[in-house]
Image 1 (cartoon, rainbow, N blue to C red):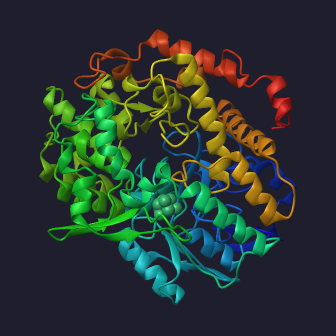
Image 2 (cartoon, protein in one colour):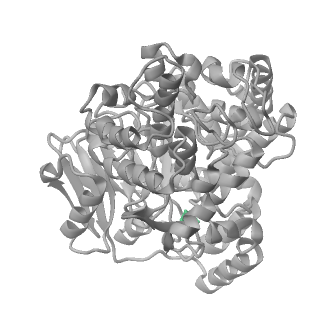
Image 3 (spheres, helix red, strand yellow):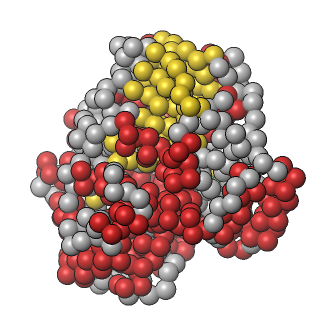
Length: 587
Ligand code: SF4
């Protein structure tokens, strides 16, 4: 089979049963791979009412069609399940090299069901697949666990997915890590592993991935690399990586600083791209990527790959920690304990703001790094009262202490690093994202007219639909000029079947609508597509958008228009005509 391995690995942890099933070929031309295909599988396996922490909630890990080929920037993969953090459908993806390894081992994806009776890990070496005891790894961080799993697989080249103590202790914003510094960060992926007593997965494969016409495919790859990928609007990933956004978003007035109080950080030079370059040891790439956006850094014994923009922003500016060494330490600790840095930085920033406003004192202060670093393991290990409080997440903490006016979250997912008071499209993107506040569904920061509601609505819909298909193909976000035309051309050559850009565009819209149907069936309503009070009522301070709020009435106007453009009714429910157009009537 071209591009696909034609097999899914099925793992029932309760029964300790391992089997394979043929890939559902009848779904491929509608859902393609990764996010789309995993979502379709998940929809078939689980009810939207399922308890996310129960054995009945499956985890679907899925690769994309190009993973394992020489197509650049395609080694990402995803996990789909119901999120224990948000209660919505969840897709979380990451890079590294696990996805090609899984395909080399012979599988397009893994579906994990049930719950092991003790801590366990899954070992895959081609067609030799086993469940092994993970009891000796209890309480270990992701770095140590990763090394142990590679050793158990018999090779340092084995690729792994692991959780740290945060996942074992089921902290709402625990994540799954891979390749030491890459994370499936959002939505509580680590909790899903923890709830199943699954400490990790290790994989080693020796096969390959077939394409229809190898010579033609290589020529296309070379052509698009030189005519599209290697242009200035993408090459920032190679030279600077995401830290380049620090100065840019700060100057634009949308950079969350001191718990989303300011839209820019006056001390940003301590943690911007230049600071990163001064601390840089070298670059690191995901498999098959010529951009190598990852930057290894080292300061005074603190070293890691990263931090990326989101961590520099939420763990740096948002906590007013403008010392790169301390942010590196924060990032490394979060990665090792298995905590999402966006949520963790957001929650710590909220706790610091509570102290500043005299609402509660957790011993955490803006700009003070000692408590900021100490509290990370307190959260993951649940070892102190403040650790247990901060583990509640921004919403839980705000509800417990009566500070809803200070929290920035949607559907219990903390805001990423772009303030909607500087760009209304980002507020709408966070509100309508299927997995809670997320900047990877629609990104409108560089669209014209940041407060032009009709233009921003169109940009959000366009971006959500295209990203749904781009993530399903597993092309990295940082091939920013990627288009449906290029995707269709590469697929046609590699599959040996005609694929049109229109067909792909329709698939993207189908995937987005299927997530909506799931969330509606899980009990979410238009009321949940919301903005935090802070964004609606508290004017942004400093910068080009000082004084700006995204007023409730403006947001509701944007949300209504968004539903209309999508072909949904006033309650945000897809209409019959839209469902028929997308072949979704039966789902
Ligand atoms: S640009 Fe960065 S994140 Fe994207 S595939 Fe390349 S190394 Fe991985």
